[in-house]
Amino acid sequence: MMDQPLDLDAVRAFVRIAELESFTRAAEAMRTTQAAVSLKLKRLEERLGCRLFERTPRYVQLSPRGATFLDHARDLLEAHDRALASLSQGRQRIGIGISDHVAGPELPALIARMNAQDPQLVIEIRIGSSGDLLQSFDRRELDTVIVRLHAGRNDGQLLAEEQFGWFAAPNWQHRADEPLPIATMAEPCGVRALAGQLLDAAGVPWTEIFVGGGVTAVAAAVMAGLGIAALSPRMVPFGAVDVGPRLGLPALPRLPVVLHTRVKDGRPREALAGLAAAFRSAVRG
Image (cartoon, rainbow, N blue to C red):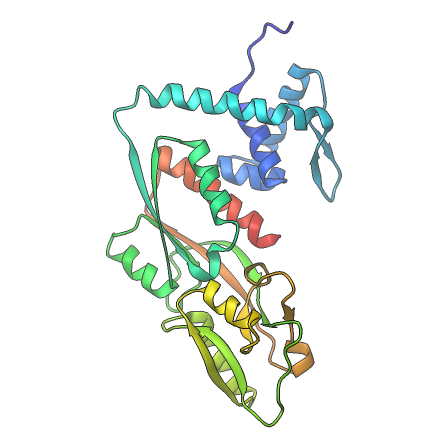
């Protein structure tokens, strides 16, 4: 029986690597260096007497022993965090705004991950347009926002860049004698404005066929066959196709995902670092 206690920082590094499938992103989440994370894992593997990951230059994957250890490692960390939280002077709160064009289907898992990291942290999430969320941030109604790059601002931290395309239902066909039907979000949506500018500059006649209150509604209109929309691939339902090349539409650029925050330290900052790293992982696929 092994009598030497486990290093909790090393166990936390192991869980972060497993969740994010990357030493680099685990280091970002833990606000440390990749070398430090690698050293923690090496010491943990030596302590346990087994290899926890299979590593190649192209991927990081749990070994069979690592997969067995993962749930136990999470339980250990949660018990540790609950013990510390029981002695805290009260719950802390963090208000986070996330752009509808950024949130994506991964959001429930990311929130669950934040809660598991700090169960005593009260997380307030608001979804909206980048412009509206930035206004709320400037009014100090939100502590942090994760948005698309907004013109005239350079005070954020770049998390990732995400490719967009012109998506339609698999059987949708454009009638050449009619303006291109576009499904989009309501103003003030930066993606909506960019799409219109690119189509106008390319001389492509277009018309709004559907205006949704969120990306989910726009994606539903696309799959219903109403028209096409400028979306990132992870936002559209399975089966949607990028019809931009077939229709000769102007290429959409890679759009930045930017973090703005006033949170500098403490438990909220640790949870936010994990959320930012997870978003990087989701956006980069």
